[in-house]
Each structure stands twice: as structure tokens, then as C-alpha cells.
Image (tube, rainbow, N blue to C red):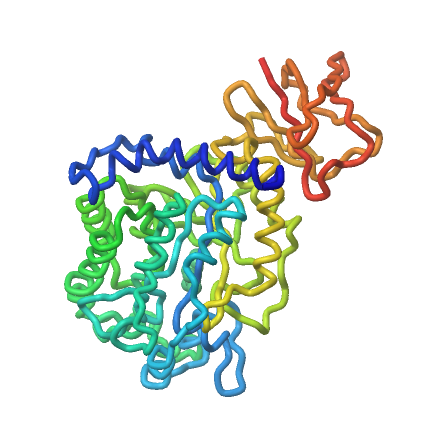
Length: 458
Ligand code: GLC
């Protein structure tokens, strides 16, 4: 094992140990007795984790956003709606969905090597096709597609083996279920949508389909770390349903965490709740990072190109540097970073994503301490980068390495010692005088993405 791998392994082990004490207590399969944790205890692993993998995968991944010589705009997981396919046209894809290259081991190990501590898989996206063996529909991977392998099960088991928290995204909107189709389907984009139209049978869908499906997912696949809802914006879904769903989940798995899209409080893409009484444990900014730190729990989700679902025509990949800076920026404001991959129709994660994830993993391998369990910075954001903090320690993440060898710190930092986090832990000289606090740093940035200086503070 080289040094880097050893450090990553040690960090993951530490993380797992801190999680496994909790996991043991709440593992209903092993002990049958579920200890109901306090809210802070329940959120503990998630606040420690800071970095997770979002996986958008389903029958839409076969199309890559393309149909009949057209390419849809934006997210390719919306292809059915955006390219105005009828249900019959779209159903051909689930019927032939045969992702023979799907390998749960490979996906989980990619996430783990990237330094991610949890995985959120789309059990069902808006298209309605289910990636597990559901008893309330045949529109699933076991009955409709030739693949006949329970994807949720394979990933849940692999995550458990590897000490990664397994979580599920689940769409409330369902374009396939007759009792759920309303505003957003059919023809969302061609102006035929009737904004006022609702489906009077939606409560039936909620009671006899959505809830039983969620129950299956929470009963048959071990501990689910997070239930990550989406598609709550349809007018037929109500805040009463949201609260009922939240309580329902916690009655099955009391320690599961649920995002705020379970209810109707989300304030658009900014993702935090509006004023009012809404269910949900954390806010969900989408493709956005709040301008400043937020005291409540939140998680920003991002794509690596512009699409959640696999979309080969979108080659506008974010750089590794941008992604590492995003991770640091998010942690410096007290949030989690949920970074998406969109595997293709055969189950292969695009090489562009793999390369970036491996580079992020190398960086985290050297700087894990400044990310996992780190909290929002108590100081103003500096021009050269970001601060994260822990009790008695502040981590200065330097994106723009000063050329003059002096890093100017916030005037309020009372530094006891300063060291470079990665590599040689040689002490750096700190000067505090009337002009402020500066650290003498080497001429060259030790890390091309972001170099971290550990400041032990008073
Ligand atoms: C949006 C999109 C969806 C995607 C999700 C991720 O709400 O509808 O396709 O899954 O955001 O946050």
C-alpha cells in the first residue's frame, strides 16, 4: 500500500468506527431493538460525512437525452417529458433495459476511493420505472426489464459491506402512474400543460402506491441512511401528505434522515425552507451554494456536466479544481456536498467522472481532517480561499497561493501553531502584529488544487 492509500484507509476506518457504534444500535435486522436516537445523534453520521455520491440511473440512461433525432435540453432524465414521448413510446426502454455492465462493487469502490461517505441512488425517478423488486407494480426491474436483478438490493448490500451509508432518492412525481399524472405530464414543454389541472385520484396513488413503495424500501433493504424525496412540487401533493410521509418513514426506521423535499417548504433551487412549519431534516440547494454559512443542516447537490442522467452530448465537464473548491466552499458554510454521476444504459460510469472522482479522492486522502466533521468557518471568507473549523482548530484552504510567501489571516484568529496539513508537518512561522496575522509559507503551492494549513487556535 502506498502512503496515500494508507492515509485514506485510516481515515475511512476512523469514520466507520465512529459510525458503526451508531449503526449497531440501530440495526433492526441484527438486534431487533431499535434505539431511537435524539435528532442530533440521528444527524451525527451525516454531519460527519460531508461528501456523498448521487447516482441518477434508470431506463432514461439508455437514451442519453436523445430520441428521434432530437436532443433534449437540460437533464437527460427528463427525456420522456422533454421530447414529448407517450407512455407507450417510453415503455419500450424499461422493457429492454439490460445493464449487463452494472457492478455494485465497482460503483461503491469508486465512491469510497473518492472519499465519499454515502451514496444516494434513484430508486425511482419521475419516469416511474423502479429499480427494485416492488410488489405494488410490475413496472420494475424484475418484472418489466430483462435484467431481473434487484439493483437496490445489490447496492445496499455492497454499501453495507464497505461501510458506506446507503440512501435512496425517490420521486413523488410519477409520469407513468395513471393516478399521479397531472400537471407535469403530458407535454410539459409544448404549452399543452394545464397548470390548474389536478388528478382527483392522486390521494389514492399516495396511499396505495407511494407509501407502500416507500415501506418496501425501508423494510427490505436494511438501514436506509437518507430518504431523499424529489418532485414534491406537483400541486396534488400536499403539506399534510408530506408530514404524514415523514412520520411514516420514522415509524418504520426511526433514525432515518429525510430531506426537506418530503414536504412543501422548499424555496426553489436555493433549497432551504420558507417560513412555516414543514417536515424534513435538511435543506436541498440544487446546483447552488448559499452565499454565506447557514446554521441549519443543508446539502448542496451538483452535476459534473450539466445533466443528472447520462448525457453524452453534454461534454461541459466541471474541472476537478472547481469540484474540490466547491466541496471546501460548501463545508466552510456548514453544508454537505452531494456530487452526481450518471451511469450509461449498460451501467458504466462515464470516464470523465471517474477521472475527477479519483483526483478528488487523492486530495481528500491528504486533507480528510479538514473536511470530515468540519464545520462552518467562524471567520469572514478570505480572498485566497476558505476556512473550515473544528474545536480548537481552523483549516485554511488556500486556492490562490500568495506569491510573496505571506498568507494573511483573519485579524481575529489567535494562532498557537501553523503546519501544512499534507506531507511534512513542519511548523510555519506566524507573525502577529498591529498589521494583522500572517503565516510564512513556502514559495510554491504544495497542492495544485488547494493547499491546507492547519492552525491550532486559542
Ligand atoms: C430536479 C430534477 C431532477 C433531479 C433533481 C436532483 O428536481 O427534476 O431531474 O433529479 O432535481 O436534485
